[in-house]
Amino acid sequence: MTRLIRLAGGGYWTPFYIHAMPTFLTSDGICLSYLIEGEGAPLLLLNGMFGDRAFWEPVTKHLREHRQCILLDHRGIGESERWVGAYSYELYARDAVELLDHLGLACAPVVGLCHGGMVGAVMALHHPNRISGLVAHGTRLLESAKTRVYDRFRRRLLDVGGVGLMMSAQMGLIFGESAMLEVEPYLGKMEDNSFNRLTAESAGPMLDALIEFSMSPLDIARMTVPALFLAGEEDLYVPPWLSERTARLWPGAEFEIMKNIGHIVPREAPQELADRTLEFLRKQGI
Image 1 (cartoon, rainbow, N blue to C red):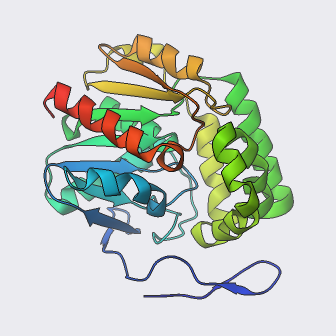
Image 2 (cartoon, rainbow, N blue to C red; image 1 turned 45 degrees about the horizontal axis):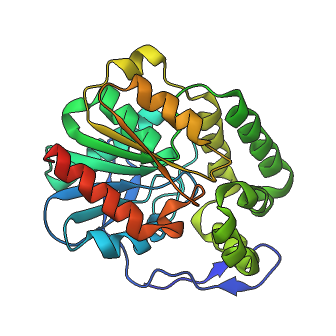
């Protein structure tokens, strides 16, 4: 199914999606879209806050020969319903658990980028029997004044200039140096694409939930789910030291630095992310 999307300022853009994704209804009646690729044991991939399942395509081409990759568009994003309401990470985690219910899966390991890793951590806290392992990259769980100040700035940019201004302002922080040189000529196109993925009406409450979120050290210290925390050496949004502090608190967690990488690891180092994920799952027997 193709759609023509009206862009701010006039003109149209045809998004990547060609085939309609399968959907399911959450317990509160929201229609969420997902995609399954590959065969084998299930692996749930949860994207960053303002990204959709297309971000995972460079990674899933390496994973789908070994795993059944389940990709969810979070509520408010991509092909899922553009819901506007009070977002929370408990709500995001419930959506993920209900997707597992819909697919008849008792549990699955989770790979999460930033926001997706936070959702996976909340699953590990409140639904530990539904998540068998967590691989989180660029994920902030502990309270951080640094990220909170920046997220409040993004919220003000959204209010003043909409999705386009907010997205363009964050590009310099989320890509590593090498990746930034490659994507710089395409920043305008990437900004345009953001209008297809989300709206200001849904993005605002998402940012509000992010600003308010933090997990207590005591909660992290009582986790029972095996975890691997990855950090991009050049990640200016969630710096490596913040991920490392979380890993030290999480019982038995591993922490690894990815050299010359920023925040958007599915695009910057897809093969390395796939390899590290598969190796972690193999070591844990998941």
